[in-house]
Image (cartoon, rainbow over the protein chains, first blue to last red):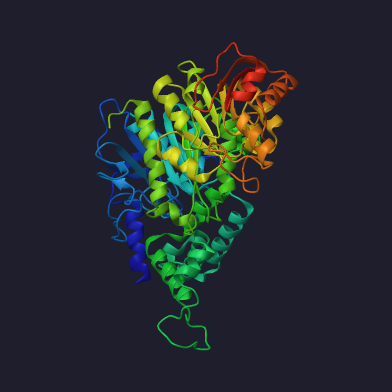
Length: 389
Length: 204
């Protein structure tokens, strides 16, 4: 069963069921690690139609374990796209009006080159032979995809969490190509506490004997237990104490009494185990290592002499930042420091903090105030860009 | 942060001081009324700073560039002369350090526009003089113990503060209880007595 699932993920890694753009030896991807990735490929999805002026394109950047299937059924899980509450025909981000692009990041496992992809030099999956991928590498690759579409300037780049980091990187590295930027529940750097949680997750994966130093595919195995534990720990950080207590309290799972054992007595235990188990069905363990590392390495101010404002010097991009009151992974202060830097750079910036107890994951949920803010921001940006409503 | 939301007769006076296409920062932008007015009638490049999260969210939902922040704390993050006009409308009296805030406005903006309720108005004086009570009026509806307005001043006080900060008063307008402009030729004491609100255009 494990091998079967491994095979399935591996197929999606090399031959994704979404469109894929392949770059040959003539177009390598320059990596921050100091090497070139070549050949490489980007798997992506698009929704809506690019207008003649090519001015209505919106790039959606996905989070840590997200993928390109933002507004259509996920081929691995069979579930709806991860942001279908927001994006689609007649939705807040209306695909009748905008051309929405979402690509799997480099280092991912759903069709863009990542550790589960076949290394052409060996004919086996890259595993840990893939160089470390940074947020900037992901954005550099996305830029090559945008070039492919002949889009000079994206109308909007948006995303939450790790997606928000990509949005900030886009606005900083390619300011003239970003008309408006919407980073949600994110930060300009990963905090020490966040790196700590990621390290716990990575150690859990690597402690699983089935990990085999990253060469598990060659052994016909996958480090499912380790990856599940990593996901369980991470999942707690995506919620809030209040939301956990509201949903689960100390409720028992399918029983009336404590069993005086280590079975999942509590609903929260059962819930986390389920989260861990379903995650390993859709995600590659090595990719999880690479994704978490990319966030850990992200520090936009450090890339600009320690002054975040310099990352946005002279920018004409319109920004809107959103944070959530109960998000302890990327607390409001992280957004506020970005706002202060943007103020210092004289940028046009809006900033809303949404009152919710749903924690970091609130950005993926049906949050009316979030949608009102996005709607207002996109609407005014579209008017400024001269896009018909 | 505009703490007298129902009494915004000063908005039009403020708007008339701002030429089209200016870069404007509205400190204490409330529900965005002034910014929206300025964007619609003057096509300004407008930004806002607002203390209440509810106000900010309303503004952003209306398509305005507004951030949550505190005039006492967050003005330091704006660059020198980043705006043509910085507006502080009905908010000065609610700041912890009005002198510092005014100083920051003059640093950030080429010009500053400040409007405030005049505590030298005859009704206020009468209340204190006759009743011996802190005044509670239609446009200052709070009791002393729950008012956000912690630093009231009179028009004369404000003129003195401007002198202290080296700011030139380029234009000043006093509005009476009916929101009508008081004649320009009147002396300061007259404005200070009959003006319910004042709007100042300052430069340094």
